[in-house]
Length: 409
Ligand code: PLP
Image 1 (spheres, helix red, strand yellow):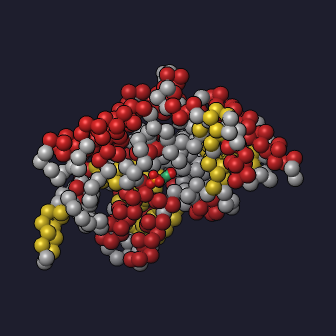
Image 2 (cartoon, helix red, strand yellow; image 1 turned 90 degrees about the vertical axis):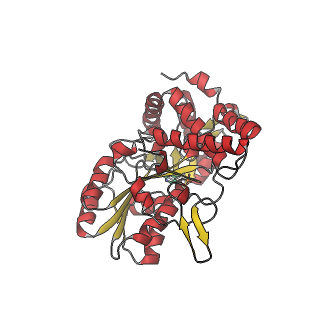
């Protein structure tokens, strides 16, 4: 059981006022606020231990390096990786997936296809699409069923009808909140000899992300969706697969031997971390993991589930509002359209009442265009520090804004 009033003290930003109203921050799928213990861990590192990592023999460099490698161990244990060598630090999910797409597609035997899904964030769609366009590999997209779940039969049909090398999919959709059946999709990929890549950007806080239980080959997530700073993320990969990849980012620390005649590369994870890594970000990520672990991950997830269910119920009271999709399991966020109201007008006006929602295409244009025939929508995404009364306030504000916008016509 979480003591939300106590927890909120760790997030002073939640007491901010916006246009004279207390902030109601319901844009957590875009980024979560950073708790004080994470900020303190980052400050402490700058105050006491800061030096570049892996490069010096002096005391501070050793302390900084140790802190980075402890953060790697912590991230590895958080996702139940077999070893810290399977955790590559990147600047976030987008960077992880771009690097992976470049590396994996370059090594795919000719003719092998990449399959993704129509519900992907652009970060797990465009890198594969572009890598395939460059190399001539087929790029295929699995559709949804009518409810907002992945159409597993259609996905399996694609896998059977094509020679597929990679299946890349989101654990949780950043628009519909759909929780995909990871084990089934990974098994379907593996049965056909394909590599399974999971985008865990949204699920990392809402769901159990256990790479061994999932059986996935690669997985990506961002620190800022779980209380760390921006600019830090993870690319997880099974060690044997990582070791088989040729790096595509080059520079200091990732090399073994550099000569005019050629260069050899060191092992994972440093093989994929060219240049100075965001070691302070990694230390913050470890502090964010500790923060969530101390709260109790089960309690965090249960509270977020309760809040999203409450939002779904409460939104039924808004005239003309249609929630996109009704997936079997929804986590983290939901998106909606309101008849006759443009999402940008809505977000602009509700902002004046202190409510932060996200309006736009949510970086998911294939989903919006192919499945729902809309260009923009509004998304509401609570975190464990939100309250039921904040959601009620936001929904009442929605009703007021819609009335006002309709009265002006
Ligand atoms: N994948 C999903 C499902 C997301 O929701 C996001 C961000 O919203 C990303 C990828 C990209 O994450 P980042 O912007 O942190 O790289």
